Length: 324
Image (cartoon, rainbow, N blue to C red; front, side, top):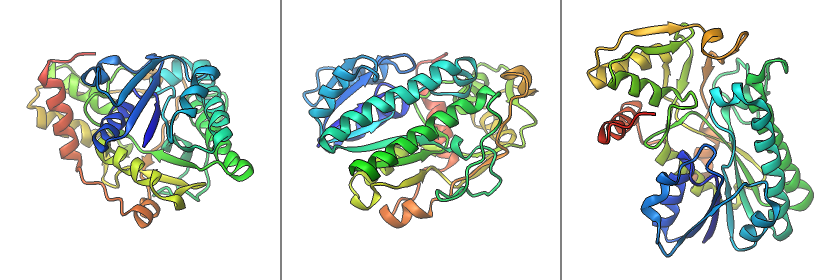
């Protein structure tokens, strides 16, 4: 296939680029490098099946030309990370919503298949765990900027599904649950790379809140494999799918496991949410996906365990003493 990946220089995007190249696809990437990095793609420079465009996904002329020249679009370009969202809510909303508007409008002109990456954040404060795609969503107060990301991505979902219903655009929506692996940075609040780097430096491992909040971490290679699997299933079009892992761990337990696996002498310290982010910050106590839907359609089963994921991230940061 001829594949366009928006945000392809990012953590997940660059792994998706690798997977598509390995399949023999021709891959074009557009990225403005606001949170992505060319270093994630340097190993592909000069590859005959790879092309990179440095530009904003909101540039309709450039995006239109790229969409016209592809068969499939993976739309990953978005603001990422809790810290970035809290500190820059205007950029978050504009980047997520305007970029998706441009991309979908151009794809609809020629009916290109689009896979839009959304987020588990859209489940908000729902207590109906594990989260099912057809379940209700419970967003927090609009005065709390933390929810601007969830709201912007939910609007993206509505828009993609509206294009599917009204213009028969073959759009697929995926909700990603805490994707982790090599190349992920802790710069924007991602917890595992932050814990690993702190542990390797023997610095305090900072747990936000009391550490009882729990998450399920999906390995990036499992996640991109699931995304490609959905593109190949016509029955996925016009629908929403969770992607992640069902192995749940509390953040306190995660910190202890990172410390043990790195052999670190770091102490584990707790930082109040108000101090880590902003006054009145709300977090989700649990974030666990129901994976039955994607499993039925594609046979998806995550292969990597949490220990596997941590080992890969630890090895990545140890390899070149990487420090954000």
